[in-house]
Amino acid sequence: MNAEGEIYQEGTGRKTSETVAGYLSALAIFMSLVGLAWHPLRLILPSLVIALIASGMGSGKGRLQYAAVLICGACLFFGLTIAVVFTKPLW
Image 1 (cartoon, one colour):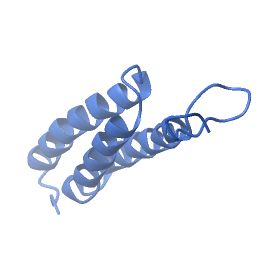
Image 2 (cartoon, rainbow, N blue to C red):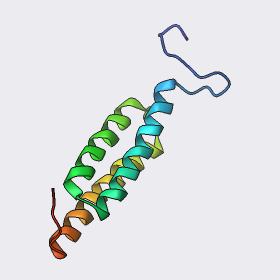
Image 3 (cartoon, one colour):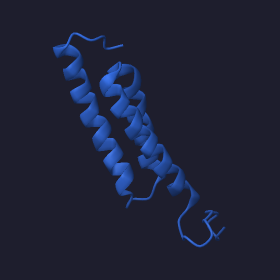
Image 4 (tube, one colour):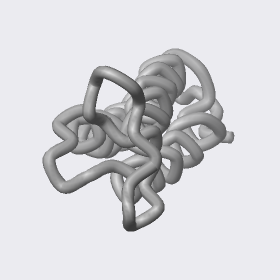
């Protein structure tokens, strides 16, 4: 713990919140990709919210958080397109 109250992992120099943000980003990407095959609104919208929360938790240089937001947004577009074209349920 430093003077500002931030908790760092030993030996890595990374904050614990950045590590948690990475795990949340990976979860959001997985949920979005599963949402393409299943009900898009049921999985992709919550995964987009999780990706945005992870993006706010991490530092400004988090590439995984940025990628998670972009992937979730693209999956939302393509998931809704797939559902409409193949007349699958959205919810």
